[in-house]
Structure formats: C-alpha cells, structure tokens
Image (cartoon, rainbow, N blue to C red; front, side, top):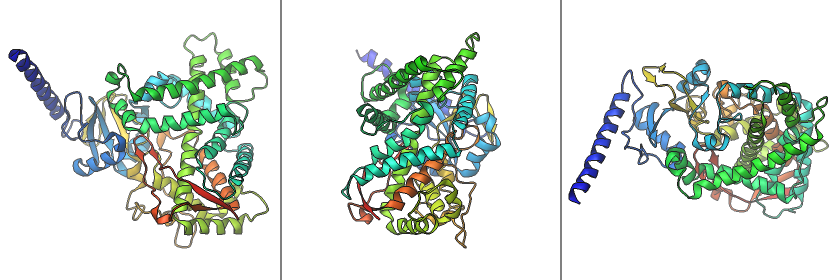
Length: 493
C-alpha cells in the first residue's frame, strides 16, 4: 500500500519536473514568450479566473510583459497585450495570423464548418460567398437601411406599450436586431410575440452567458476531459442544437419553394450554389455547411449587436447629461417630423463619438476570437510554434492611454477634435482587424446608429435607481463582456 502511494507521488513529481523543464525550454529568448510556470495538465489554472479571463490576462501582462505565454489547461496560449503587437500581428502580418485558434465550444458545435470557427480553404470560400450574398441583399445599401427603420418602428411600438413603467430591454432589442439579419438570411421577419421566436432569442442570450460563465471558460481549458463528464458545460450545446434545428426547418421550407431564377435570401442562394457544385466531391457548399454558416450569420448578426446597443443604453442611463446632448443633436439635425437615416450621421459628430465611445468602453470581445499561426513563426525576439493559439487583446488597443487619455472613463471626447468635429482613430478596433475582421461591421454600425438615435428621438431614458448607483461593470468577462441586467423607464418626449 505504501509502495503504491510512493509510486503515485513519484509519478506526480516526475510529471511536474517534466512540465517545468518543458516550460523552461519553450520560454526565453529565441523560444516561446515567458509566462507563469504551468502545472501538469492544469496549466495556469491557479493564475487565471475563468469567470474574468480578460481582466486576469491584463494583470498577468503587468507581471510578465506585453507578450507572454499562459497555459489554459495543457495548451499554451500566446497573449499579445499591447497595441503595437496586436496591430503588427493582425494587420502587418495578417496572412500569418489569420487562422482561427483553438476554441473548444466552437469546434465541438461546428465541427470545422461555417464562418466563425473554421479556417480551412472551405472557410475562405464560404466567407467570400456570404459576404457577396449579404451585399447583394443590401448590406451597406439603402435597402437594408429601410429594413432597419422598419424594425425600429416595431421596436418603438413595443416600448410605447410600457407606458413609462420599468422594463428590461433585452428581448425587445434582440427581436429588433435579429429580425434584420432574419430578413436577409431567411427572407422574412418574425413577430416579437411569436413564442418560438422568443424562445430562440432566449437560446442566443443563454449561449452568450454560458460561453462566458465559469463552466463555459473551464470547458475551453479542459474540453478533452469535460467532454466525457456531465455538468452545466453541456447545456450550451443543447441551446446550440435548438438553434440549428430551427435553421434546418427553415432550410427544408426553402427547398420546397426554391426558384433558382429568383433567389430570395441567403439560404436560397446557398441552395443554388449547392446545385451548381453538386458534381464537385470536394465542394464546401453542402447541407451541413449551409446549416452551420446560416447558424453563424443568425447568431453573430443578432446577439453581438443587440448586446452592444443594450450596453449603450445602460451607459446613457448612467450619464444622463450625455444622453441630453445626443438628443439635442438629434433635434437639431433630424428634428421630430422624420426618422433618422444613415446620411444624418455625418452631420452628428457628437452622436457618432458617443457610439464609438460605447464600443470602445465596453470592448465587447476583449480578447477578440482566438487566432493561430499555421507555421513556426518568428515574432519579435520569439518563435511561436505552428498551431499555437494567439489571444490578441483588443482591450489593450481600445484602452491605449496614449491614444485615449484616462481610458477607463466613459468620455465621448475621445473621438472629438477640439472644434467639436469627429475624430477618427486607427485604434478603434471593436470588430477586430485584418483578415478576420467581422464581416458584418457595416450592418452592425448602421443598426447601432439607427436604433439608438430613433429611441432617443422619441423617448428619454430614465434609470429606476440613482444613476450613480448603476453598475456598468461586466458581470462576465471571458470571450465576451456581458453587461449586468438592468431596467429602465422610457418617457415619451
């Protein structure tokens, strides 16, 4: 019995020594960037807080330098936590750093397919196809602007029904934003009272929360173990399956009504492309990729934008004087007799600055989505081995104190010149940068402007508590920064 215990202790010690020696070998000049010493299998789990990963890595950068290695589980991750490092990797050396890094939830959910979590040749083809199709159906054009304006009218109706009483804006905003992408992808909108549609909104909201929860982040680190164990981490895949089942149903209906001479939406276009390439055994245009890419567009075009708008409303509640100045500019440029349009934005520098500052301040994706290098890569004085995951910290760019003085303060002045005109910044990278920049950036910016200005044109937003008591710190900060729940009152103007 004693001999058995001694053997276990000896094996653990050998494993620790091997892990430490391996870490020392990989670290240092000419090797991997330095970082905290990992434990066998567990990696640096004692150094990071899964529920607040972004903040933890920021603190580690203060201790280990702006470029360091941290082990999330047994996998080494290189963190770039300074604006010049992030810009060099994502923009100057975009080809070398463009591939998608290890992201366990996305890999299990999409199995290498779709747009968000893949990086093979098929990904490139499907991404290009999706971008061209979105443009053909109006992304960045007047036709999509009219769709957004239509949805804001429905949103105003729903807000009016609250009659100035407190309400949670989560599902109202989710429905409005989601219906815009639905009109492009599915060719129709859904009623906000539709129980099935509301259930899908809840699915998406839960996916975002579960991804960034303690268990969601633990799964990212220890998926090889947790894949075989029961627990809360598995619930996220049930939510994803529900959304994909909905997408599959929509595709079946499209197959029955498809007119190849007149495709009505993204699904129709993809089905036509599948028909064109049916004799190509290596084609990326097949049913599984249709389901997955449609799922990607649906969730990416819904939840990220609605969360940004929601966080923006929270900040306007927190800073009512800023809300007042936006309303003054809306009244001066747009007035009350018509709805805001995209063309108004160039005449509204303060509003534009507020919207930019909202995105900068909340840093929705603090670490971007992970990247990787597809070959051994010399970067500064280090060598990053092929397949190593890279976390380019967007926070380090958006919170660069030389570009944005007092970056932890919410201040629209960060995007204004002294004469009050709008100030562009190369450090504004909330949609990431380089070859992996968000393909829906143009649509998201249009929605944020039109939805926010239309709400403020018609309502003054009031907090149900003293604005000074409002909490604006993310409740979860993993892959995404998730805003705290709040209620507001919308008083007609």
